[in-house]
Amino acid sequence: MITFGCPDRTGIVARVSSFLADAGGWIVEAAYHTDPDTGWFFTRQVVRADSMPYSADELRARFAEVARALSAESNWRVDDTGERRRAVLLVSKEGHCLYDLLGRVASGELDVDISAVIGNHDSLAGITRAHGIPFHHVRFPSGDKAAAFAEVRKLVDEHDPHAIVLARFMQILPPDLCAAWTGRALNIHHSFLPSFVGARPYHQAHRRGVKLIGATCHYVTADLDAGPIIEQDVIRVDHGDTVPDLVRKGRDIEKVTLARGLRWHLEGRVLVHGNRTVVF
Image 1: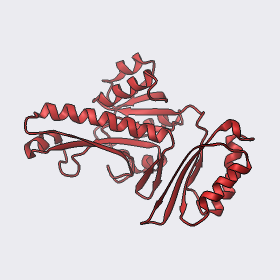
Image 2: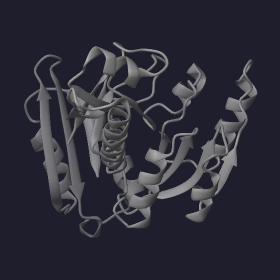
Image 3: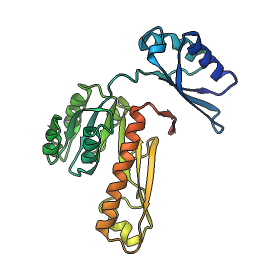
Image 4: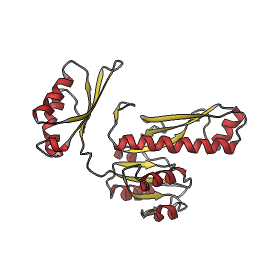
């Protein structure tokens, strides 16, 4: 699979198609998009591995020349979709996202190996281990959390995951971790930000009489909850819904939105440009 973005111009599709055709590459999926606001072109090309005369590593080395010619610079990737994807999940006390992802993996609906789950509480250790997945409890002191985050980083990096999922992990990643995990760390949060900040957002929303609640899955950056958005969804609520109803519906939409965003990320469908994404 080849994905990249570059300044738009004529001949990009022909250049890539010719490169693949000359190697005997059999394209089975192709998507294109041009952003008229930035003048940037994006594409995702999936090629049958058995049609290529060389490995993914050699394809990567050969395509580098094409990328340079198109001024793609660092905005390109060649990935072997046959390689098993790995994810590490970070959790706190709320388990709805964890339960959902574990269920999707166990049923084969989500094709990823969850290498480990790391929690700043041990509340979710039992369900994690019941699925045969290691659980690591890292205590976070109320003061300086640098040592705790250093331990989390060590545990995560041991698995070299394709995705680090903040599945309702209620700690703010420090800037150095955001930088180290750029493009791999995904977060999920409710749709009430920035209107209802702080504690008990569902209570605040209920008092305000909101008619829509939703969730946002995005990449983690040092700008809290403001990273490139991968997926969003909403569900309607009305005057008859209680606070527990809003919480239940909010959790449902968080689960679905996070699962979609993670799937698209693992399938290499998300291209980031600045603080925006193209999702093929």
